[in-house]
Length: 116
Image (tube, rainbow, N blue to C red; front, side, top):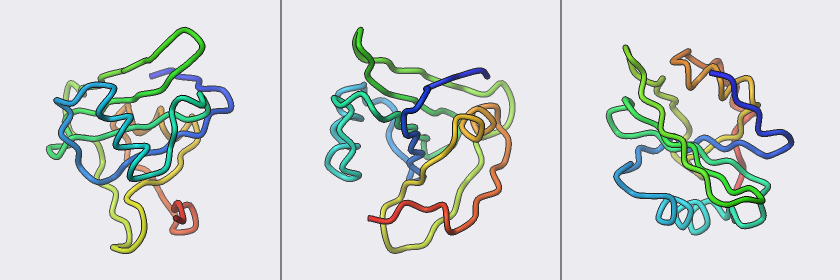
């Protein structure tokens, strides 16, 4: 999958989320729990369902709000384990996000975790 979010910070939320929620509720969750204000148009947030069969990518640009739903034809999105303390999110590069959305397993080092 080819995505280019330019200089935006990409955050993957590793705690499962009910993806029946739309853009507004997911953006509110990003704001309240991760202190990510999508209105600044600087961030992209990726949410994964509990079954890891779906993910939603949300962000805002100059034209409006964007929601991308990704479902893999086979397999599941990789489960990423993190420490129990701190936010359940991590930053990714555009390349790592594209690989994750294609179903690849990410090699994550602990130093790449977001610190709250």
